[in-house]
Image (cartoon, rainbow, N blue to C red; front, top):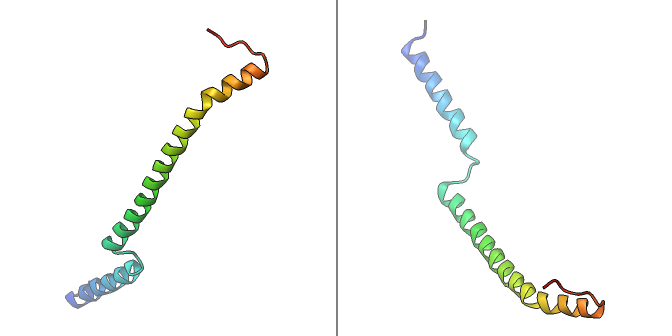
Length: 77
């Protein structure tokens, strides 16, 4: 049967083991700092994508019409 001393030693061993295992993990502040950076970059990429998409669509229709005219393709009404 376990004595109180045995139980205390097991508890201490568990605490020590858990502390060692989680010591390499980032803190909450480090994690949120990294996530803020990633989300900032994602936001920038999305904004750039919107600008490029709009640019393509503005130029799209005149280019199609020019190709259709050159190839003598009738456009549907």
